[in-house]
Length: 116
Image (cartoon, rainbow, N blue to C red; front, side, top):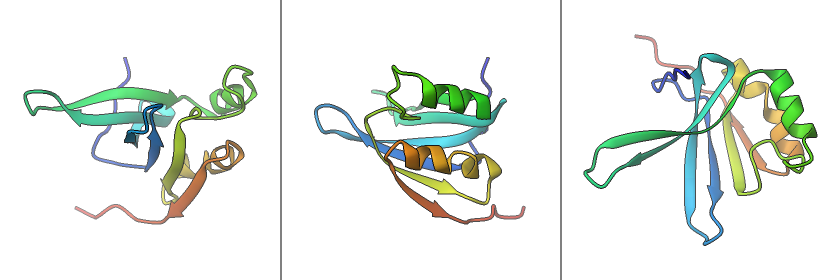
């Protein structure tokens, strides 16, 4: 089972569907080395919901995706327009190059988490 820490955000992925509707997925830490991409939304009753979009287990997993002919050399698929990554986190830094090679616009920023 995948366990996700929703309190920390490594970044966001912005994209579009075939009908032109826009969406955003957040990149969170999970019980895998590089983290999980989660789509957050509200259901018909207004309750907060979350759905796994994809995850990246480790660097080898990333390399395998990039080499997979069915993925077309794109780490996160064809519908991605932009990736924003908080380079404070090593997990975000680990996928910058593959995102750029995938043809996505990559925005990097640095924001340390607030101390409690």
